[in-house]
Length: 160
Image (cartoon, rainbow, N blue to C red; front, side, top):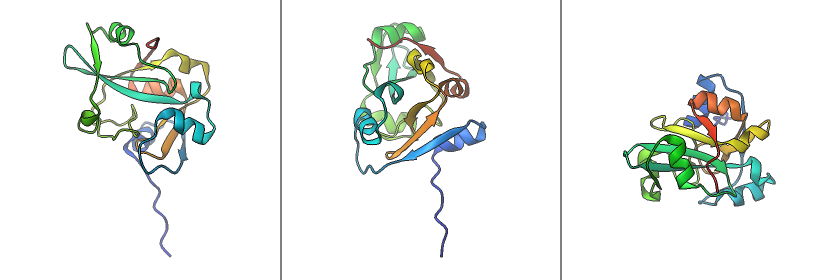
């Protein structure tokens, strides 16, 4: 009888390589569902369940923002936070080419390139938060300070 091979995403390999503690949470998901639906499905509070958004600045540089699933990114605050004149959301069609991940599986961990990442400051209020694990149907529970440290990001207020 063959042993089931453990699923490892780039995000998980990145955390393992950097010796960062995390827990994986697997759930059934064949197609895109938004972060609020994932949180409801898993019984997680919205304020501890975070989504990953990718933006592009006037400079043509990419910036990643991690915020609670029930909040909206304030593009003006976000631009100011990263020193850009303005930001726009990356078009859904470009997510895979830029990050290496698909919509609904995008995470700030282990992208094709490490883009500057800002995690909403509310993550500091919790011992752990939930983020995508790098594919649909997989989440990672991680300490927010460990997350920011390993991605060399920062905390800031970037929501309305």
